[in-house]
Image (cartoon, rainbow, N blue to C red):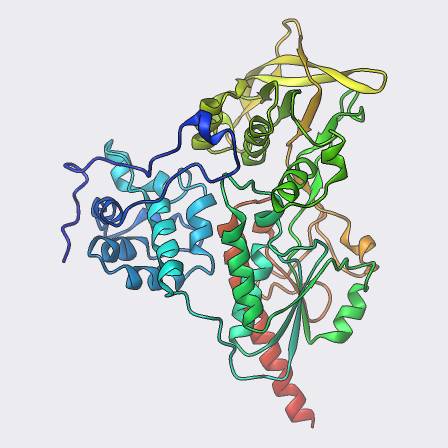
Length: 479
């Protein structure tokens, strides 16, 4: 058995990052991967807590201390199999989960001042190793049940649910309006955080397991929700939220003021080699421009770092609170600063100055933090000092996302929604107001965290499995 609890004598060490100047030239992932010995050594720092806070704060409740111990002992295949037991995409989680807010941020060793165990990097290592060694097994369908499920949305929740349902023996069809599966994994998250072959091989594994993908299929245009219900025994809505949150300031509709997801999608399409007219004509291309990104979440970090790689003249990020109160990953902020992004804290747009219909400047108010709101965060308020003008040829709004009007888009007025516009589901069954139509839980709403989406996929697939078994049993009785 390997020596554990080595956190005092063995310092924390993440995989080496490429130099900032070099990595800003391309969209490759910025960190190298552990060598085997380094992964084993870093795993051996784990204190094997009796109550592992890392697992408690993992949305998937991964068996983290157990597969760290197996990695430290050199039992890499077993470590991978245990990691894979609770996650359908562990190498993706290892890359893009906000470990500093979840598992690593709650590591007991972190509290002692010795630096958390590098959980995400180890998770990435053992699963990449599994792919290289052929340990990732094909998806084997369960015994055929004679029932089919339609999944609307090929993002992480939809893909995860599809995998579990196929494993139970259901025929599974996945419908997505994009021409490639993966959702935000494919078109939202840049390659420097998640290289696209990592996503593609997961999708191809599902395809090889008999899951049928209908790409470029827009529900409401190619078929109504009711028509899909006629094709399948159950439907899962796993669309996430994609509607850009609006900003109500002067000039918000000027040319050059764009939504974050439009900008990121264009960039990712170019990485695939697609022809993207809005990129070619400069509308969604930061090359040579003064870029201002509005927002402080992970999407904003993706935008500023993408702009650097596209050759922007300057890149500023405006956020209305201070650094300590921003929602995005502090690691991402540090990476962005290394690559040349300037953060303007306590700043919010008052208006977008335009000339001839095209944005030229952002007029920003200085902000200060007032009293705490109901969540405990201090509320930003305008500082009466003078506003500041910042040159801007391209403004990217990264203010979060709202739900689309699915009942209207899908010609399904009877589909219930919450006051936020998200699909209304029963808390126990995860079924919507329509019989046999389920939805991934509210935790997916507005979240780009793949772990939450994966967990929702697993939970909703279990609810659907129970429903479909009951439906089949009732049909046998009726016959």
